[in-house]
Image (cartoon, rainbow, N blue to C red):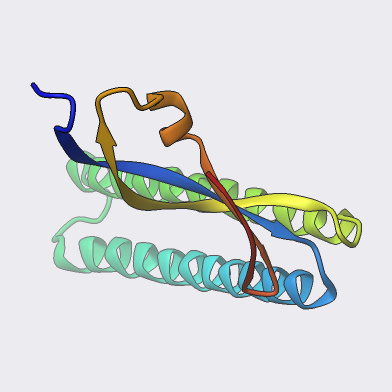
Length: 146
């Protein structure tokens, strides 16, 4: 490779946000919507599970047959496992919501990451090229740390 060779690489850019009343309101609304969605999924899961069990029993000549009971038990296990997963997600969302409500104004929090590309050439410091962040306040870029 020659000294003026370069390649384009992909990197993750950290998005940091300044906590403002608007930011808190939007974050709280997103989490409230996600919690509501979890509740709807739980309700749907329960209804679908009950319907499947009802269908299994109604299609059987003898609902007390051990094979039918095994099928019902399997469905109930699957529903219980999915319920536990959804309830854990909901607990995490409620915890995040609580943490957001406790944040102080003008505090800086990590909000996520986006991908970016950059050119890399011989002599560049790879670590510096990879450690990039953007600071936003109410959606407006305040700072780009290269």
